[in-house]
Length: 231
Ligand code: IPE
Ligand code: IPE
Ligand code: MG
View 1 (cartoon, rainbow, N blue to C red):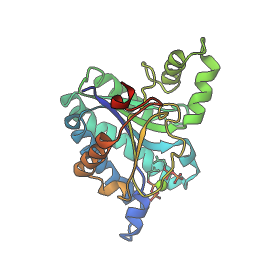
View 2 (cartoon, rainbow, N blue to C red):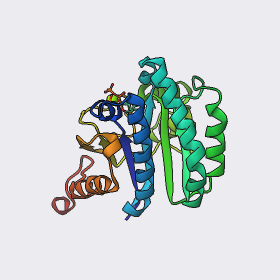
View 3 (tube, rainbow, N blue to C red):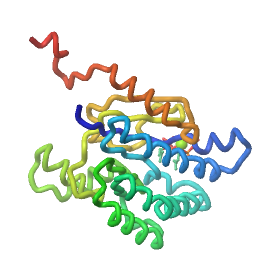
């Protein structure tokens, strides 16, 4: 069975914190623990690529203290988790724009990517200052040949990735909203969608397993006919 590309819109940190009368940043902190749990569970569930939406280009609209707190948390995560990623064969890539990130984050991103580059068990892609529409525009402005294959390569490069943008098999959104919020619009052309009311800080390995079980019950047709009916 080929390995899956699962993408997750990690939503609900703020509401998780508010319901506990805690600051929103406490929700983001608890969300970082959920990231660690998810990354550890993913390879054992047949996931080869995991793309996590951590900060959208529209999230710059939030109060500057929340934005600064999120950037600080991302830096801490990279510092704390890189060694564990190397040990567990997890290759880390950050996708999205880099030119607006705090300058002290850039060396942490570069060293995490460099140190984990030989990981083959899981490719963890974290989307930061990411907008699917802006990525598509950047790719469209440089693509040489207008074909799906070369466009997917240009899209990969537009997000600082060496390889072509991989199609998503399963997209999960936590936090109860049922929308894409400008995430992986090209890559999700035939993604199966799974929405759960669970707030991201509560998301567990069992929730990931349940989402995959739901996915495996779906019949993917890609516009054709089911395997039996096709004969
Ligand atoms: C997701 O949680 C994390 C980010 C967008 C950075 P939110 O912060 O959007 O949480 P809610 O949706 O307000 O509960
Ligand atoms: C999407 O969540 C972005 C991330 C999870 C990083 P938002 O909370 O920003 O999305 P909207 O505003 O509800 O669409
Ligand atoms: Mg939200």
